[in-house]
Amino acid sequence: MKLIEKDGKDIFKRFGIPVPQGRLAHDPDQAAAAAAELGGRAVVKAQVLRGKRGKAGAVRLVGSPEEARQAAAAILGMDLGGERVTVLLVEERLDIAKELYAGITIDPGRGSAVLIFSARGGMDIEEVAATAPEAVVSLPFDGVEPVRRHDLYALVKRAGLTGPELVAVTGVLLGLVQGFTAMDATTAEINPLVIVAGGRAVAADAKLVIDDSALFRHKDLTPTETEPQGPLEKAAWKAGVAYVPLAGGEVGVIAGGAGLALATMDTISTLGSRPADFLDVGGGVSVDRMAASMRIVAGTPGVRGILVNVFGGINNCELMARGVLKALDEDHIEVPVVVKMRGHSQDEGWALLEAAGIDVIKKGTTEEAVRLIIQEISERNEDHGGLR
Ligand code: GDP
Ligand code: MN
Image 1 (spheres, rainbow, N blue to C red):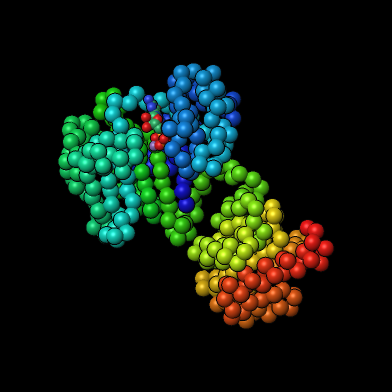
Image 2: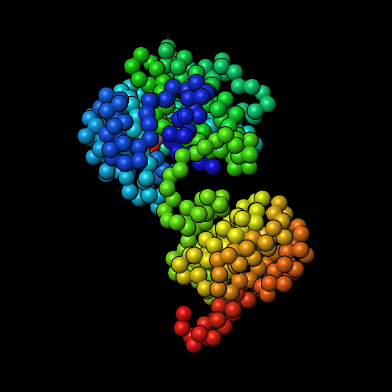
């Protein structure tokens, strides 16, 4: 799970990393009020999960509450990499002496986390690594051997920092390592980590991604809701499923796992039709999550049939079948539905679906399931005299 900058900064702060003072704003008035509280000089920043905001004009320096209001009006509603801006962060404006980079990510080749620090930041770290490799230093760590302050001190020194900056940055890196570990993060990044007057180091930006498989250990985490695009996306977000509607498709896809979803979509295209969406139900599917998935896909524009292609491993086929039936029952979904499911509690799942008259592919392939739903869609059309 990716967190917005403000949520990331709140967590960084808990681990002793200095962050600018600031608050969220949802409209221009709130932004003006927040800037006034900070004395007028502020930074207004879009809170989105993707996109390079600086380059897109979604990070603006302002000198008064009125300017904050105007900046907020300009940024709200912007489209950043397909994500609409609905929340802003208004924070204390820093007088930046220097921009540095600090980040931790997982190095799959090495099978460990790796801390990367660069005496140059603000831009892409890949760019720095290519143009000024001497400024970039790194330290792998594995969560078994503790990372000690003097290891970090030596690392930062190697990148060329001295004096108060060296001490301040060492403290930030220690907090970053501790936060990354405690939060089960897969990415923790501060770009830029800025040096302000007196050699103090402050996190001007924050990117924190928590391992989805570890979310059960962080039930207290309450990420800020950044409004998804529409009601279907919102329902998907609430249900905890990954969903992307696709314009011009006709077969609604519900699959277990992103890989199976993509394979199903490919098969639909290969066999001459088009998928109307990507929906991955994820693991630990409940009756309600399955029903919500059915509702979302049935509501997707253009859908003329739904193909459920799931596997019962972590998931339970009986529960998934109950979810499908619940949605059919409560939502009067009238398009044809084909279900291919196999695995844990398959017999119970099959029996429930068959009793309800749903077409079930028991031991067949995805290709068979796709052929069947395409055929049912075309038969349904003929019944309606070719009219939709
Ligand atoms: P990103 O482009 O999405 O990574 O957004 P950032 O939060 O990194 O902001 C982009 C750039 O805005 C930074 O690299 C800084 O140069 C600048 N910036 C952000 N906050 C401040 C601030 O408080 N003061 C000043 N002067 N510049 C800032
Ligand atoms: Mn940044």
